[in-house]
Amino acid sequence: MELLHSGKVRDVYQDGDDLILVASDRVSVYDAVLPTPIPEKGKLLTRLSLWWFGQLADLVPDHVLSATDVPAQWAGRAIRCRRLRMVPVECIARGYLAGLGLREYQATGGICGVPLPPGLVEGSRLPEPIFTPTTKAPVGEHDEFITFDDVVAQVGAGVADDLRRLTLAVYRRGAERAAARGLIVADTKLEFGWAADGSLVLADEVLTPDSSRFWPADDWRPGRAQFAFDKQFLREWANTTGWDRKPPAPQVPPEIVEATRTRYREAYERLTGHRWQG
Image 1 (cartoon, helix red, strand yellow):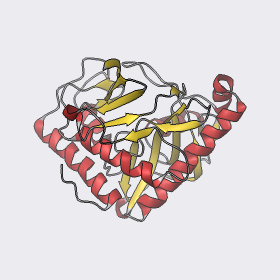
Image 2 (tube, helix red, strand yellow):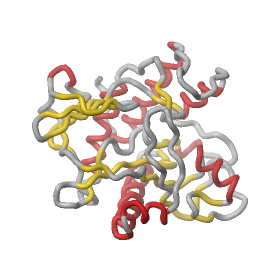
Image 3 (cartoon, one colour):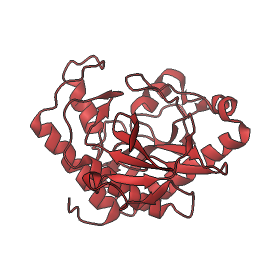
């Protein structure tokens, strides 16, 4: 097999006409890869993504060919996938105000050209979920907010409409499933690609603690930072270190590694209703 790409978290190999997508235990914050892995993270993300692909199958086709027909050394953390031509846009849906979305709102009164009501605070629920795309930056660089018109300019009006529609449909389905388990999906980031026939296909990962913010519904309080079952915990730790958010990133202490792993595991168990077996 040939290594085609090594990203912040995943490695992509070519195997004949197929791709093997391998989720590592690497973790990134602020677009930099931390030097300390989170044990079991690759398996957790893979298993949770596979569960979500099943939950979303009636909404959008996905890239999965097999979760078992993969090299033995990557069993449990790899997926055999269709080869796609990736859409050059990160597709983000937001239902609540947090992170960079909050900062953009505070600066402009909206996000990605979408105006929002005045007076919203950290953790506020938005009047309705919104599509807030970004660029796809190389490793070590930062994604930047773009408007829907920017997406149209890149991929055309029809594809842009489909990306927005599918992103919001996936978010709403995910939020509905999560709410039944006592979780809020504050936002989520998706990736799409074009299949050989030109259809849009959901790819990479979906609704994981790496790509989404998950908050316990019974603890949600607008106006403050929310307890999170995702890598926001790592971002907050990184903010206490004095790190300037440029490589090299700092080593993560063992207690922070274990606390992060526990949160990821709980996200998996709450969302799927299945106990994590490793």
